[in-house]
Image (cartoon, rainbow, N blue to C red; front, side, top):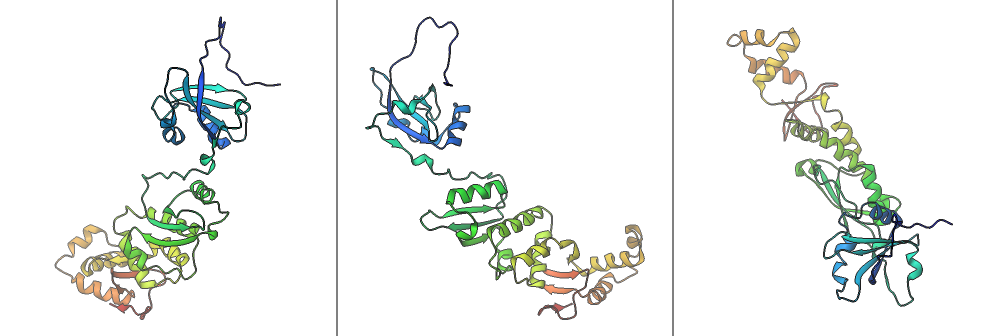
Length: 305
C-alpha cells in the first residue's frame, strides 16, 4: 500500500489545528497537478471563492480542493489573497466528505485558452457552436492553441463550428479576398501567418494589395499562393525611377554610371516605354509588374500603362 503524506523530522507532538471546510471544489486532473506543483500562483478558483470562507475563532476555515480523478486534496486558506497562502495536503480527502457536502464542479469545464496577446492580430473571427458562448479567435496562433480552442468548444474539428464576422486587420486586404471555397480555420491561420511575415516590411502590404487587385484570386488558397510569390511582382512608385532601374538591369550599369547619365537621358520617357513593353498594369494601389510571365496586354480588366 502506498500513502502520500508529509512527514516531519523528529516531530515531538502533533501540531495540527482544527479546519472547517466551507466549500469543496473539484478540478480536472491535469489542473490539480498544476496546482499542486505551483501552490503560490494565482488561480481563478481561489479568486472566485475566497469570499466564501467564513472567519471565526473556533477553527481555520478553508476551501477543499479535490482531484476529480483521484482521492487526494488540499486544504487552502487564502487569507483574502488569490493563491494558497496557507495550504495542507490531505491524502484520501475524498473519503472525509459527508453526504450533505456539495461539490462545486464548475471548474471541470476546460479553461478558456490563453493567447499570447503580444502577437500581431492579423485576422479575427467568431466561432459559433450550438449550446456554447460565441468564441472570438484571433489569428495567427500555433497548433497547440487551436487544439485548446477545439477542446474548449467541445468539438472534434473546426468544421463543427460556424465562422462568423471575419475581419482583417487591414480592411482593404480583406475586401480583395474572396472565399468561394469556404476555407477552414486552419486555412485562415496559414494565411494570417504568411501575412504576418510581411507585416513590418516596407511597401509589401501595398504590393500585395496591388497583386490581389490585378490577379483577382477566387479563393483564399489562391490568395495565399500569391502572397507566397510576392518576389515575382514589383510595384512601381514612379516612372523616372523605373527607367533608371530598367536601364541598369539591361546594360549592367552600376549606380554611379546611372548618375553620370543624369541630364543626358530622359529616364521618365524610357521608363514609360519599358512599362508598356514589360506589361505593367495599373491597379488601385499603383502600377504593378509581373516578372514571370509578364501580364498580357489585357489582364482581367486592368488598364495597361
